[in-house]
Length: 326
Length: 265
Image (cartoon, rainbow over all chains, first blue to last red; front, side):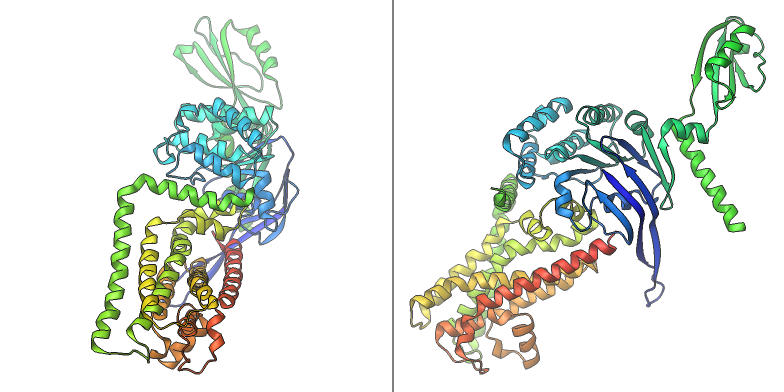
Protein backbone atom coordinates (compact mmCIF):
# COMPACT_ATOMS: atom_id res chain seq x y z
CA UNK A 1 0.00 0.00 0.00
CA UNK A 2 2.83 2.34 0.92
CA UNK A 3 6.44 1.97 -0.21
CA UNK A 4 8.97 4.52 0.94
CA UNK A 5 12.65 4.31 0.19
CA UNK A 6 15.37 6.71 1.26
CA UNK A 7 12.90 9.54 1.60
CA UNK A 8 14.47 12.92 2.26
CA UNK A 9 13.06 16.37 2.54
CA UNK A 10 14.96 19.58 3.15
CA UNK A 11 13.65 23.03 3.89
CA UNK A 12 15.35 26.34 3.45
CA UNK A 13 14.88 28.37 6.57
CA UNK A 14 15.60 32.08 6.58
CA UNK A 15 17.92 33.10 9.36
CA UNK A 16 17.77 36.81 8.83
CA UNK A 17 20.29 38.78 10.81
CA UNK A 18 20.58 42.36 9.74
CA UNK A 19 19.59 43.22 6.22
CA UNK A 20 21.06 40.31 4.35
CA UNK A 21 18.97 37.22 4.37
CA UNK A 22 20.76 33.99 4.88
CA UNK A 23 19.31 30.58 4.43
CA UNK A 24 20.25 27.40 6.12
CA UNK A 25 19.05 24.00 5.08
CA UNK A 26 17.12 21.99 7.61
CA UNK A 27 16.52 18.32 6.96
CA UNK A 28 13.07 17.45 8.22
CA UNK A 29 13.03 13.90 6.92
CA UNK A 30 16.39 12.23 6.57
CA UNK A 31 16.42 8.95 4.69
CA UNK A 32 13.24 7.27 5.84
CA UNK A 33 12.37 3.83 4.43
CA UNK A 34 9.42 1.64 5.25
CA UNK A 35 6.58 -0.30 3.72
CA UNK A 36 2.99 -0.73 4.77
CA UNK A 37 1.00 -3.70 3.48
CA UNK A 38 -2.70 -3.54 2.63
CA UNK A 39 -4.88 -3.94 5.70
CA UNK A 40 -2.22 -2.96 8.23
CA UNK A 41 -2.75 -0.39 10.96
CA UNK A 42 0.44 1.51 11.67
CA UNK A 43 1.11 4.11 14.30
CA UNK A 44 3.64 6.79 13.42
CA UNK A 45 4.90 8.57 16.50
CA UNK A 46 7.61 11.00 17.45
CA UNK A 47 8.08 14.30 19.26
CA UNK A 48 7.11 17.64 17.72
CA UNK A 49 9.32 18.49 14.79
CA UNK A 50 10.44 14.90 14.35
CA UNK A 51 9.33 14.84 10.71
CA UNK A 52 5.96 13.12 11.07
CA UNK A 53 3.85 15.74 9.33
CA UNK A 54 6.42 16.26 6.60
CA UNK A 55 6.36 12.52 5.89
CA UNK A 56 2.56 12.55 5.79
CA UNK A 57 2.57 15.50 3.41
CA UNK A 58 4.92 13.65 1.06
CA UNK A 59 2.78 10.51 1.25
CA UNK A 60 -0.34 12.48 0.35
CA UNK A 61 1.24 14.43 -2.50
CA UNK A 62 1.14 17.84 -0.86
CA UNK A 63 4.92 18.12 -0.72
CA UNK A 64 7.46 16.88 -3.23
CA UNK A 65 10.39 14.95 -1.72
CA UNK A 66 13.89 16.34 -2.05
CA UNK A 67 15.01 12.81 -2.86
CA UNK A 68 13.92 9.24 -2.39
CA UNK A 69 11.10 7.14 -3.71
CA UNK A 70 7.48 7.09 -2.60
CA UNK A 71 4.64 5.00 -3.92
CA UNK A 72 1.24 5.07 -2.31
CA UNK A 73 -1.60 2.92 -3.54
CA UNK A 74 0.39 2.23 -6.70
CA UNK A 75 0.99 5.85 -7.74
CA UNK A 76 3.65 8.49 -7.25
CA UNK A 77 2.00 11.01 -4.91
CA UNK A 78 3.85 14.11 -6.08
CA UNK A 79 3.25 13.42 -9.77
CA UNK A 80 -0.27 11.96 -9.63
CA UNK A 81 -1.76 14.02 -6.85
CA UNK A 82 -5.33 13.94 -8.13
CA UNK A 83 -5.23 10.23 -8.92
CA UNK A 84 -4.01 9.56 -5.43
CA UNK A 85 -6.68 11.80 -3.90
CA UNK A 86 -9.34 9.46 -5.23
CA UNK A 87 -7.70 6.43 -3.64
CA UNK A 88 -6.85 7.64 -0.19
CA UNK A 89 -8.59 9.50 2.60
CA UNK A 90 -6.80 12.05 4.74
CA UNK A 91 -7.86 13.51 8.06
CA UNK A 92 -5.93 16.33 9.66
CA UNK A 93 -6.91 16.79 13.28
CA UNK A 94 -6.05 20.46 13.18
CA UNK A 95 -7.63 21.55 9.92
CA UNK A 96 -11.04 20.93 8.52
CA UNK A 97 -12.15 19.89 5.09
CA UNK A 98 -15.80 20.56 5.87
CA UNK A 99 -17.77 23.65 4.85
CA UNK A 100 -17.92 25.79 7.93
CA UNK A 101 -21.25 27.52 7.43
CA UNK A 102 -23.17 24.63 5.93
CA UNK A 103 -24.97 21.76 7.61
CA UNK A 104 -22.79 18.67 7.94
CA UNK A 105 -24.96 16.82 5.45
CA UNK A 106 -24.24 19.43 2.75
CA UNK A 107 -20.49 18.98 3.15
CA UNK A 108 -20.87 15.25 2.64
CA UNK A 109 -23.03 15.85 -0.39
CA UNK A 110 -20.44 18.20 -1.93
CA UNK A 111 -17.70 15.65 -1.33
CA UNK A 112 -19.86 13.07 -3.04
CA UNK A 113 -19.74 15.26 -6.17
CA UNK A 114 -16.07 16.05 -5.83
CA UNK A 115 -15.14 12.37 -5.60
CA UNK A 116 -17.86 11.24 -8.04
CA UNK A 117 -19.31 8.67 -5.69
CA UNK A 118 -22.32 6.83 -7.18
CA UNK A 119 -25.44 7.86 -5.21
CA UNK A 120 -26.22 4.34 -4.02
CA UNK A 121 -22.69 3.72 -2.66
CA UNK A 122 -22.74 7.17 -1.11
CA UNK A 123 -25.97 6.49 0.76
CA UNK A 124 -24.77 3.12 2.04
CA UNK A 125 -21.42 4.46 3.23
CA UNK A 126 -22.90 7.55 4.79
CA UNK A 127 -25.54 5.52 6.60
CA UNK A 128 -22.91 3.19 7.96
CA UNK A 129 -20.68 5.97 9.27
CA UNK A 130 -23.59 7.95 10.66
CA UNK A 131 -24.85 4.89 12.47
CA UNK A 132 -21.53 3.79 13.92
CA UNK A 133 -20.39 7.28 14.84
CA UNK A 134 -23.74 8.47 16.15
CA UNK A 135 -23.96 11.47 13.84
CA UNK A 136 -27.66 11.21 13.03
CA UNK A 137 -28.74 14.22 15.07
CA UNK A 138 -25.89 16.45 13.91
CA UNK A 139 -26.42 16.09 10.17
CA UNK A 140 -28.54 19.23 9.95
CA UNK A 141 -26.25 21.33 12.15
CA UNK A 142 -23.85 23.84 10.56
CA UNK A 143 -20.29 22.64 11.03
CA UNK A 144 -19.30 25.78 12.94
CA UNK A 145 -21.76 24.82 15.69
CA UNK A 146 -20.46 21.26 16.16
CA UNK A 147 -18.39 20.25 19.15
CA UNK A 148 -14.81 19.22 18.42
CA UNK A 149 -15.70 15.56 18.92
CA UNK A 150 -18.65 15.78 16.56
CA UNK A 151 -16.57 17.63 14.01
CA UNK A 152 -13.83 15.00 14.08
CA UNK A 153 -16.39 12.27 13.53
CA UNK A 154 -17.66 14.36 10.63
CA UNK A 155 -14.13 14.72 9.22
CA UNK A 156 -13.56 10.98 9.35
CA UNK A 157 -16.88 10.29 7.66
CA UNK A 158 -15.95 12.85 5.01
CA UNK A 159 -12.66 11.05 4.36
CA UNK A 160 -14.36 7.67 3.99
CA UNK A 161 -17.19 8.53 1.58
CA UNK A 162 -15.14 7.57 -1.47
CA UNK A 163 -14.14 4.26 0.17
CA UNK A 164 -10.38 4.88 0.21
CA UNK A 165 -8.01 1.92 0.44
CA UNK A 166 -5.82 3.89 2.79
CA UNK A 167 -6.83 6.29 5.52
CA UNK A 168 -4.14 8.66 6.77
CA UNK A 169 -4.87 10.40 10.04
CA UNK A 170 -2.73 13.18 11.42
CA UNK A 171 -3.44 13.55 15.14
CA UNK A 172 -7.06 12.42 14.89
CA UNK A 173 -7.72 12.40 18.63
CA UNK A 174 -6.05 15.69 19.52
CA UNK A 175 -8.10 17.75 21.93
CA UNK A 176 -10.89 15.20 22.29
CA UNK A 177 -12.32 14.07 25.60
CA UNK A 178 -11.87 10.47 26.67
CA UNK A 179 -15.26 9.29 25.54
CA UNK A 180 -14.92 10.80 22.07
CA UNK A 181 -11.44 9.34 21.72
CA UNK A 182 -12.67 5.90 22.64
CA UNK A 183 -15.54 6.13 20.20
CA UNK A 184 -13.21 7.12 17.35
CA UNK A 185 -10.77 4.34 18.14
CA UNK A 186 -13.49 1.76 18.19
CA UNK A 187 -14.75 2.96 14.83
CA UNK A 188 -11.29 3.02 13.24
CA UNK A 189 -10.55 -0.45 14.56
CA UNK A 190 -13.78 -1.62 13.02
CA UNK A 191 -13.13 -0.23 9.54
CA UNK A 192 -9.60 -1.62 9.68
CA UNK A 193 -10.58 -5.16 10.60
CA UNK A 194 -13.91 -5.43 8.86
CA UNK A 195 -13.45 -3.33 5.74
CA UNK A 196 -9.71 -3.92 5.49
CA UNK A 197 -8.95 -0.21 5.17
CA UNK A 198 -5.25 0.38 5.75
CA UNK A 199 -4.59 2.88 8.52
CA UNK A 200 -1.60 5.14 9.07
CA UNK A 201 -1.92 7.50 11.96
CA UNK A 202 0.30 9.94 13.74
CA UNK A 203 -0.50 10.68 17.33
CA UNK A 204 0.73 11.96 20.62
CA UNK A 205 -1.74 9.81 22.44
CA UNK A 206 -0.13 6.46 22.94
CA UNK A 207 -3.43 4.89 23.91
CA UNK A 208 -4.37 5.31 20.25
CA UNK A 209 -1.47 3.06 19.33
CA UNK A 210 -2.15 0.58 22.07
CA UNK A 211 -5.76 0.21 21.00
CA UNK A 212 -5.41 0.46 17.23
CA UNK A 213 -2.01 -0.30 15.86
CA UNK A 214 -0.29 -3.67 16.00
CA UNK A 215 2.70 -1.94 14.45
CA UNK A 216 4.53 1.12 15.63
CA UNK A 217 7.06 3.32 13.89
CA UNK A 218 9.02 5.80 15.95
CA UNK A 219 10.66 8.74 14.23
CA UNK A 220 12.95 11.41 15.60
CA UNK A 221 15.20 13.94 13.90
CA UNK A 222 13.87 12.76 10.57
CA UNK A 223 14.97 9.16 11.05
CA UNK A 224 13.10 6.02 11.93
CA UNK A 225 14.30 4.92 15.37
CA UNK A 226 12.25 1.78 15.59
CA UNK A 227 9.74 -0.11 13.51
CA UNK A 228 7.88 -3.21 14.58
CA UNK A 229 5.13 -4.71 16.66
CA UNK A 230 4.62 -2.87 19.91
CA UNK A 231 5.33 -6.05 21.90
CA UNK A 232 8.69 -6.60 20.20
CA UNK A 233 9.70 -3.01 20.85
CA UNK A 234 8.80 -3.41 24.47
CA UNK A 235 10.86 -6.57 24.71
CA UNK A 236 13.83 -4.96 23.03
CA UNK A 237 13.86 -1.63 24.80
CA UNK A 238 12.60 -2.61 28.21
CA UNK A 239 13.75 -6.19 28.72
CA UNK A 240 12.49 -6.24 32.30
CA UNK A 241 8.96 -7.03 33.32
CA UNK A 242 7.39 -6.77 36.69
CA UNK A 243 5.42 -9.30 38.72
CA UNK A 244 3.28 -7.93 41.53
CA UNK A 245 2.22 -10.45 44.17
CA UNK A 246 -0.17 -10.05 47.08
CA UNK A 247 0.52 -12.51 49.89
CA UNK A 248 -2.03 -14.05 52.21
CA UNK A 249 0.06 -13.16 55.22
CA UNK A 250 2.66 -10.39 55.46
CA UNK A 251 6.13 -11.75 54.98
CA UNK A 252 9.45 -11.32 53.19
CA UNK A 253 9.66 -11.35 49.39
CA UNK A 254 10.32 -14.75 47.86
CA UNK A 255 13.90 -15.30 46.87
CA UNK A 256 14.29 -16.52 43.28
CA UNK A 257 17.70 -16.45 41.50
CA UNK A 258 17.81 -13.79 38.77
CA UNK A 259 14.83 -11.94 40.17
CA UNK A 260 15.05 -8.64 42.02
CA UNK A 261 12.57 -7.63 44.68
CA UNK A 262 12.35 -3.90 43.94
CA UNK A 263 9.99 -2.86 46.71
CA UNK A 264 7.39 -3.95 49.23
CA UNK A 265 4.13 -2.32 50.21
CA UNK A 266 1.48 -2.67 52.88
CA UNK A 267 3.90 -3.97 55.48
CA UNK A 268 5.11 -6.89 53.37
CA UNK A 269 1.72 -7.86 52.02
CA UNK A 270 2.56 -6.77 48.46
CA UNK A 271 5.87 -7.24 46.64
CA UNK A 272 7.14 -6.00 43.30
CA UNK A 273 9.55 -8.36 41.54
CA UNK A 274 11.35 -7.62 38.29
CA UNK A 275 12.64 -10.30 35.97
CA UNK A 276 14.20 -10.38 32.51
CA UNK A 277 11.89 -11.66 29.84
CA UNK A 278 14.75 -13.31 28.00
CA UNK A 279 15.65 -15.47 30.97
CA UNK A 280 12.30 -16.49 32.33
CA UNK A 281 8.67 -16.54 31.35
CA UNK A 282 6.05 -15.13 33.67
CA UNK A 283 4.60 -18.64 34.09
CA UNK A 284 7.97 -20.05 35.18
CA UNK A 285 8.45 -17.31 37.72
CA UNK A 286 4.95 -17.76 39.12
CA UNK A 287 5.55 -21.48 39.55
CA UNK A 288 8.74 -20.75 41.48
CA UNK A 289 7.07 -18.08 43.60
CA UNK A 290 4.04 -20.12 44.67
CA UNK A 291 6.38 -22.85 45.90
CA UNK A 292 7.84 -20.45 48.45
CA UNK A 293 4.93 -18.30 49.56
CA UNK A 294 1.18 -18.44 49.71
CA UNK A 295 -0.10 -16.07 47.02
CA UNK A 296 -3.47 -14.38 47.27
CA UNK A 297 -3.35 -12.52 43.95
CA UNK A 298 -0.81 -11.60 41.30
CA UNK A 299 -0.41 -9.48 38.17
CA UNK A 300 2.21 -9.16 35.44
CA UNK A 301 2.85 -5.51 34.63
CA UNK A 302 4.10 -4.63 31.14
CA UNK A 303 6.10 -1.43 30.77
CA UNK A 304 3.91 1.47 29.64
CA UNK A 305 4.19 2.44 26.02
CA UNK A 306 5.36 5.90 27.14
CA UNK A 307 8.29 4.25 28.89
CA UNK A 308 9.15 2.29 25.79
CA UNK A 309 9.26 5.40 23.64
CA UNK A 310 11.12 7.42 26.26
CA UNK A 311 13.76 4.69 26.40
CA UNK A 312 14.01 4.71 22.63
CA UNK A 313 14.69 8.45 22.62
CA UNK A 314 17.25 8.08 25.39
CA UNK A 315 19.04 5.39 23.49
CA UNK A 316 19.09 7.61 20.43
CA UNK A 317 20.57 10.59 22.27
CA UNK A 318 23.19 8.34 23.87
CA UNK A 319 24.35 6.90 20.57
CA UNK A 320 24.21 10.42 19.14
CA UNK A 321 26.58 11.61 21.84
CA UNK A 322 29.09 8.81 21.34
CA UNK A 323 29.26 9.48 17.63
CA UNK A 324 30.02 13.14 18.32
CA UNK A 325 32.88 12.24 20.67
CA UNK A 326 34.53 9.71 18.39
CA UNK B 1 -22.15 14.87 -14.15
CA UNK B 2 -19.01 15.46 -12.22
CA UNK B 3 -18.32 18.63 -14.14
CA UNK B 4 -21.19 20.17 -12.29
CA UNK B 5 -19.06 20.21 -9.20
CA UNK B 6 -17.96 23.85 -9.55
CA UNK B 7 -21.50 25.22 -9.87
CA UNK B 8 -22.33 23.10 -6.84
CA UNK B 9 -19.40 24.53 -4.88
CA UNK B 10 -20.55 28.02 -5.79
CA UNK B 11 -24.11 27.15 -4.78
CA UNK B 12 -22.87 25.91 -1.44
CA UNK B 13 -21.04 29.16 -0.89
CA UNK B 14 -24.12 31.20 -1.75
CA UNK B 15 -26.25 29.17 0.63
CA UNK B 16 -23.85 29.70 3.48
CA UNK B 17 -24.07 33.46 2.93
CA UNK B 18 -27.80 33.35 3.34
CA UNK B 19 -27.16 32.64 6.98
CA UNK B 20 -25.82 36.19 7.23
CA UNK B 21 -28.55 38.14 5.45
CA UNK B 22 -28.17 41.44 7.26
CA UNK B 23 -24.45 41.73 6.55
CA UNK B 24 -25.08 40.85 2.92
CA UNK B 25 -27.51 43.76 2.53
CA UNK B 26 -25.07 46.15 4.17
CA UNK B 27 -22.12 45.01 2.10
CA UNK B 28 -24.16 45.32 -1.06
CA UNK B 29 -25.08 48.92 -0.27
CA UNK B 30 -21.47 49.70 0.68
CA UNK B 31 -20.26 48.43 -2.68
CA UNK B 32 -22.78 50.53 -4.59
CA UNK B 33 -21.75 53.61 -2.60
CA UNK B 34 -18.08 52.92 -3.26
CA UNK B 35 -18.88 52.67 -6.94
CA UNK B 36 -20.74 56.01 -6.78
CA UNK B 37 -17.69 57.75 -5.28
CA UNK B 38 -15.55 56.80 -8.24
CA UNK B 39 -18.31 57.99 -10.53
CA UNK B 40 -18.46 61.25 -8.64
CA UNK B 41 -14.76 61.84 -9.26
CA UNK B 42 -15.30 61.68 -13.01
CA UNK B 43 -18.38 63.92 -12.87
CA UNK B 44 -16.60 66.54 -10.75
CA UNK B 45 -13.65 66.41 -13.10
CA UNK B 46 -15.91 67.22 -16.05
CA UNK B 47 -17.38 70.28 -14.36
CA UNK B 48 -13.93 71.81 -14.85
CA UNK B 49 -13.03 70.43 -18.28
CA UNK B 50 -14.97 69.45 -21.37
CA UNK B 51 -12.72 66.72 -22.69
CA UNK B 52 -10.21 64.32 -21.22
CA UNK B 53 -7.55 63.09 -23.63
CA UNK B 54 -9.88 64.03 -26.46
CA UNK B 55 -12.88 62.15 -25.04
CA UNK B 56 -16.16 63.65 -23.88
CA UNK B 57 -17.68 63.00 -20.49
CA UNK B 58 -20.01 60.29 -21.75
CA UNK B 59 -17.23 58.57 -23.66
CA UNK B 60 -15.10 58.48 -20.52
CA UNK B 61 -18.12 57.17 -18.62
CA UNK B 62 -18.39 54.38 -21.18
CA UNK B 63 -14.81 53.30 -20.50
CA UNK B 64 -15.35 53.65 -16.80
CA UNK B 65 -18.52 51.51 -17.00
CA UNK B 66 -16.87 48.77 -19.06
CA UNK B 67 -13.99 48.66 -16.61
CA UNK B 68 -16.33 48.73 -13.61
CA UNK B 69 -18.54 45.90 -14.81
CA UNK B 70 -15.53 43.79 -15.81
CA UNK B 71 -13.82 44.43 -12.50
CA UNK B 72 -17.01 43.55 -10.65
CA UNK B 73 -17.29 40.19 -12.38
CA UNK B 74 -13.57 39.48 -11.88
CA UNK B 75 -13.87 40.44 -8.23
CA UNK B 76 -16.69 37.94 -7.86
CA UNK B 77 -14.50 35.05 -8.99
CA UNK B 78 -10.91 36.10 -8.43
CA UNK B 79 -11.39 38.38 -5.42
CA UNK B 80 -11.16 35.45 -3.03
CA UNK B 81 -7.55 35.01 -4.07
CA UNK B 82 -7.01 37.72 -1.45
CA UNK B 83 -7.54 34.93 1.07
CA UNK B 84 -4.59 32.99 -0.29
CA UNK B 85 -2.13 34.13 2.41
CA UNK B 86 -4.56 32.89 5.06
CA UNK B 87 -5.09 29.64 3.21
CA UNK B 88 -1.35 29.08 3.06
CA UNK B 89 -0.75 30.01 6.67
CA UNK B 90 -3.55 27.94 8.18
CA UNK B 91 -3.00 24.89 6.00
CA UNK B 92 -6.30 25.21 4.17
CA UNK B 93 -4.32 25.18 0.96
CA UNK B 94 -3.08 21.68 1.87
CA UNK B 95 -6.70 20.58 2.16
CA UNK B 96 -7.30 21.86 -1.39
CA UNK B 97 -4.27 19.91 -2.57
CA UNK B 98 -5.73 16.73 -1.10
CA UNK B 99 -8.80 16.86 -3.30
CA UNK B 100 -8.94 15.47 -6.83
CA UNK B 101 -9.52 18.94 -8.28
CA UNK B 102 -7.34 21.82 -9.43
CA UNK B 103 -6.41 24.29 -6.71
CA UNK B 104 -7.22 27.46 -8.65
CA UNK B 105 -10.84 26.61 -9.53
CA UNK B 106 -11.36 25.42 -5.97
CA UNK B 107 -10.24 28.77 -4.58
CA UNK B 108 -12.27 30.71 -7.13
CA UNK B 109 -15.41 28.82 -6.15
CA UNK B 110 -14.63 28.85 -2.47
CA UNK B 111 -15.78 32.29 -1.50
CA UNK B 112 -18.04 33.90 -4.09
CA UNK B 113 -19.39 36.95 -2.30
CA UNK B 114 -22.79 38.00 -3.45
CA UNK B 115 -22.30 41.50 -2.12
CA UNK B 116 -19.83 42.06 -4.92
CA UNK B 117 -22.79 42.05 -7.23
CA UNK B 118 -23.21 45.62 -5.99
CA UNK B 119 -20.23 46.64 -8.05
CA UNK B 120 -21.45 44.84 -11.14
CA UNK B 121 -24.89 46.39 -10.79
CA UNK B 122 -23.35 49.84 -10.55
CA UNK B 123 -21.15 49.19 -13.58
CA UNK B 124 -24.05 48.00 -15.70
CA UNK B 125 -26.22 50.98 -14.72
CA UNK B 126 -23.53 53.45 -15.77
CA UNK B 127 -22.92 51.41 -18.92
CA UNK B 128 -26.60 51.69 -19.87
CA UNK B 129 -26.54 55.44 -19.28
CA UNK B 130 -23.32 55.95 -21.25
CA UNK B 131 -24.44 53.80 -24.19
CA UNK B 132 -27.62 55.82 -24.45
CA UNK B 133 -25.64 59.04 -24.56
CA UNK B 134 -22.68 58.36 -26.85
CA UNK B 135 -22.85 58.41 -30.63
CA UNK B 136 -22.56 54.76 -31.71
CA UNK B 137 -23.17 53.57 -35.23
CA UNK B 138 -24.86 50.34 -34.14
CA UNK B 139 -24.39 47.06 -36.00
CA UNK B 140 -24.81 43.42 -34.90
CA UNK B 141 -21.03 43.20 -34.48
CA UNK B 142 -21.03 46.20 -32.17
CA UNK B 143 -23.84 44.75 -30.09
CA UNK B 144 -21.76 41.59 -29.72
CA UNK B 145 -18.74 43.71 -28.83
CA UNK B 146 -20.71 45.46 -26.10
CA UNK B 147 -21.74 42.14 -24.55
CA UNK B 148 -18.38 40.44 -24.89
CA UNK B 149 -16.26 43.35 -23.65
CA UNK B 150 -17.16 43.10 -19.92
CA UNK B 151 -16.64 39.35 -20.04
CA UNK B 152 -13.27 39.55 -21.76
CA UNK B 153 -12.39 42.35 -19.38
CA UNK B 154 -13.31 40.19 -16.41
CA UNK B 155 -11.05 37.41 -17.70
CA UNK B 156 -8.19 39.89 -18.15
CA UNK B 157 -8.63 41.28 -14.64
CA UNK B 158 -8.87 37.76 -13.20
CA UNK B 159 -5.67 36.77 -14.96
CA UNK B 160 -3.92 39.82 -13.51
CA UNK B 161 -5.28 38.86 -10.11
CA UNK B 162 -4.04 35.29 -10.36
CA UNK B 163 -0.56 36.37 -11.43
CA UNK B 164 -0.32 39.04 -8.73
CA UNK B 165 -1.53 36.71 -5.99
CA UNK B 166 0.90 33.99 -7.01
CA UNK B 167 3.48 36.18 -5.31
CA UNK B 168 1.98 35.01 -2.00
CA UNK B 169 3.56 31.60 -2.53
CA UNK B 170 6.94 33.23 -2.14
CA UNK B 171 6.10 36.09 0.19
CA UNK B 172 3.21 35.04 2.38
CA UNK B 173 2.25 38.64 3.09
CA UNK B 174 2.27 39.57 -0.58
CA UNK B 175 -1.34 40.70 -0.43
CA UNK B 176 -0.47 44.39 -0.46
CA UNK B 177 1.47 43.99 -3.64
CA UNK B 178 -1.32 41.99 -5.21
CA UNK B 179 -3.90 44.59 -4.28
CA UNK B 180 -1.77 47.39 -5.67
CA UNK B 181 -1.68 45.60 -9.01
CA UNK B 182 -5.34 44.61 -9.17
CA UNK B 183 -7.05 47.72 -7.79
CA UNK B 184 -4.39 49.84 -9.44
CA UNK B 185 -5.14 48.38 -12.82
CA UNK B 186 -8.83 48.99 -12.24
CA UNK B 187 -8.19 52.67 -11.58
CA UNK B 188 -6.00 52.81 -14.66
CA UNK B 189 -8.44 51.17 -17.03
CA UNK B 190 -11.30 53.43 -16.03
CA UNK B 191 -9.78 56.36 -17.96
CA UNK B 192 -8.57 56.86 -21.53
CA UNK B 193 -5.02 55.57 -21.53
CA UNK B 194 -3.60 58.49 -23.49
CA UNK B 195 -3.85 60.66 -20.38
CA UNK B 196 -1.04 58.67 -18.77
CA UNK B 197 2.67 59.06 -19.29
CA UNK B 198 4.22 56.89 -21.94
CA UNK B 199 6.07 54.31 -19.75
CA UNK B 200 3.05 53.76 -17.51
CA UNK B 201 0.90 53.47 -20.60
CA UNK B 202 3.09 50.79 -22.06
CA UNK B 203 3.20 48.74 -18.91
CA UNK B 204 -0.49 49.01 -18.22
CA UNK B 205 -1.60 48.52 -21.80
CA UNK B 206 0.56 45.68 -22.93
CA UNK B 207 2.38 44.04 -20.03
CA UNK B 208 -0.76 44.07 -17.90
CA UNK B 209 -3.21 44.14 -20.79
CA UNK B 210 -5.44 46.66 -19.03
CA UNK B 211 -6.06 48.80 -22.11
CA UNK B 212 -7.95 45.89 -23.63
CA UNK B 213 -10.49 45.90 -20.82
CA UNK B 214 -12.21 49.16 -21.74
CA UNK B 215 -10.11 51.59 -23.75
CA UNK B 216 -9.63 49.80 -27.09
CA UNK B 217 -13.10 48.21 -27.17
CA UNK B 218 -14.59 51.64 -26.47
CA UNK B 219 -12.65 53.14 -29.38
CA UNK B 220 -13.98 50.43 -31.68
CA UNK B 221 -17.49 50.97 -30.45
CA UNK B 222 -17.28 54.75 -30.89
CA UNK B 223 -15.54 54.37 -34.23
CA UNK B 224 -12.74 56.66 -33.05
CA UNK B 225 -9.11 56.73 -34.06
CA UNK B 226 -6.57 55.75 -31.45
CA UNK B 227 -4.70 58.95 -30.54
CA UNK B 228 -1.69 56.68 -29.98
CA UNK B 229 -1.83 55.40 -33.53
CA UNK B 230 -2.82 51.75 -33.22
CA UNK B 231 -5.10 50.47 -36.01
CA UNK B 232 -8.85 50.24 -35.46
CA UNK B 233 -9.09 46.44 -35.41
CA UNK B 234 -7.17 46.35 -32.11
CA UNK B 235 -10.44 47.20 -30.36
CA UNK B 236 -11.88 43.86 -31.46
CA UNK B 237 -9.07 41.72 -30.13
CA UNK B 238 -9.96 41.81 -26.42
CA UNK B 239 -11.31 38.23 -26.32
CA UNK B 240 -8.07 36.98 -27.85
CA UNK B 241 -6.01 39.02 -25.41
CA UNK B 242 -8.18 37.64 -22.60
CA UNK B 243 -7.54 34.06 -23.71
CA UNK B 244 -3.79 34.68 -23.85
CA UNK B 245 -3.83 36.36 -20.46
CA UNK B 246 -5.77 33.46 -18.94
CA UNK B 247 -3.33 30.94 -20.41
CA UNK B 248 -0.37 32.91 -19.07
CA UNK B 249 -1.99 33.19 -15.64
CA UNK B 250 -2.62 29.44 -15.59
CA UNK B 251 1.05 28.79 -16.27
CA UNK B 252 2.20 31.22 -13.59
CA UNK B 253 -0.18 29.62 -11.07
CA UNK B 254 1.11 26.14 -11.88
CA UNK B 255 4.65 27.30 -11.48
CA UNK B 256 3.81 28.94 -8.15
CA UNK B 257 2.05 25.87 -6.77
CA UNK B 258 4.96 23.72 -7.85
CA UNK B 259 7.23 26.05 -5.93
CA UNK B 260 4.97 25.75 -2.87
CA UNK B 261 5.00 21.97 -2.94
CA UNK B 262 8.75 22.04 -3.42
CA UNK B 263 9.60 24.36 -0.56
CA UNK B 264 6.40 25.01 1.38
CA UNK B 265 6.10 24.10 5.00
